[in-house]
Each structure stands twice: as C-alpha cells, then as structure tokens.
Length: 353
Image (cartoon, rainbow, N blue to C red):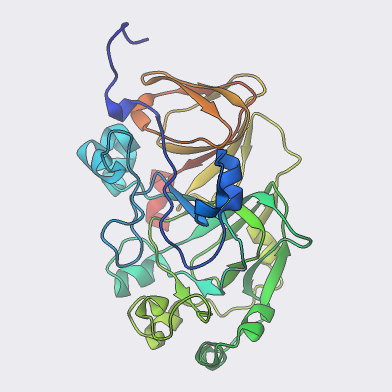
C-alpha cells in the first residue's frame, strides 16, 4: 500500500475515461447513451472510442482519447511505455498499445466493407497494422439481430468489381453469411473478410489500432468519389485486400456463444485472436483477482471497486470505461461487477500476425 497522502504517478493509476465519440457516417448511439446513463441519446454518436491512440482516417487528432488532466493518452504512453504497456510489450511494439476498443451501436445496418491485413497495410498504407477485429455482443434490439461475415461461396474478382461499380447492395449482402446474434456471442473478423453489422446490434469491439475500411457498399454512407472509401489508393488496389473465398462451411469457426458461462473469468475468444488482442468477461459476484497488464475495462453491470497493487482503488459502476496501466500491478474487482476486459496481443504472438 502507498503511504497516506502520497499521490501515485499517473502511469500507475487506473483512469476512468469520458466518452470519446468522433463523427461517423451512420446512425446510432442510443444504446451507448443508455449504458452510460446519459439523459439525451440524441447527442450521442454510434461509436465511443475507448483508450484510443488512433485517429480517424486521414485526420490528425479526431478519435484520440484524452485523460482527465487534458493529456492525450497517446502522449502519456509515449512518455513512459514500459509503465503503460509493460516491458515485454514495449520491446516488441514500443509505445504502441496495439489495441483500439469501441462501443458500437448500429442504429442502422452498416455497409458491406472490409479491412486490410498487416501485410497489405505495410505495402500500401505505410502502417504496421491492418485491421483485424472482433465483436462482443452486449445488447440487441429488433426482431432479428444479425451480423454478416464472409462470402457464402467463392467470388471472382470481376464480380466484386462489378458489385462495387454498380453499388449493388442487395447482391453484396445476399452473398454474405448471415449470423443471428444475442448478448454473450462473440464474432472474430479477420482482416480481408467482407462483413456488415445489422441494425440493433450493440457491441464492444476490439480491433487493431487503425481506421482502415474499404467500403464495398458506399452509397448512402460516403459521398460519390470520396477517396476515403478506397483508402485513397484507388479501387483497383483496394479491392485486392478482399478475401473472396467461400466461408459458408467454416463461418461457425468465427463465433463463440458464451451467454451461459458465469465463471469468474470467461475467455471471449479462441487462440486465433492472440496475435491481435485478447478479451475476457469478468463476473465479480465475489472478488476476482486479475494479473498485471495494460487493459481496457467496460463495465456492463454492477457497482463495485477496482483495487490495484500500485495504483490505488477506483470506484466502478455500470457504463464506466477505464484504462489500466501495466504498472498498476495486480488488481481485483468486486461488487457484482460484470466487466469486459480487453487486452493487447500477447507479445510473443505478435510476430506471427
């Protein structure tokens, strides 16, 4: 325990983060407002970027998270990477947290789109990271909440090009595998996989820390000719990042059903996500101990406390989002909290990504 009256360095303290909702191109946000206890959902956008060191595509600052003292999280991590992300992580990735967490509330169906891989991003976008992502379903509304992932059958390049040129939304959506979802489900979306999120699906999204999206379906979401739809590299190049293989027989490998699991720590993904991120759901019906490590917490239920070895104690209630530095040490949550704990890739797995 720290001596009375002695403040801990910021890089040791868990930090409760305010909402961070940059402008996006689709409707939503009511579920985020409800979770956070906001009075007026109309003022809330469809995404809340939590513990973000990432900016919107081609923008210098929008999307970055700010700590309560006004410092950008990006700058705080850069000033003391070992304290924030741990020495092993810093040896591999430096001051890069390698993680972006979002609350995403689809107030309308998102467009069919795709994200590039690490190798594509290095070759064409000058970036270490592509954008592999995964969805933790935390709420749904409407009669048939559904997400879509991967083409049902193999699709040739000319067909994809024709769909995009004609903006044939009906054909693109029909070509994807529909996946009915409910709270507790998780869906892994590897880079290259065409996908969409249906109206009424509320998720905690983990992803690599970029804003790289190729909008196969841009009508109604981007202005005609907007270069951001193809990442400003042209359609001919952008479309080479699309996984055109058929996933009809293996899409179930991307999905886990965890709603009925109530152990203190519930893994939310399989080992296939470890080169990119990790996550678990914590059920603190009694106190639950957590190992040290940079993490982002999203509180879904309860009203309790996060106690840390070196960073003191922080009250946590439903709707709170927190970033926990590695230097906070071991921690414990209690009070009946249900928390999604999001973590960066396992350092020893990063080279394999």
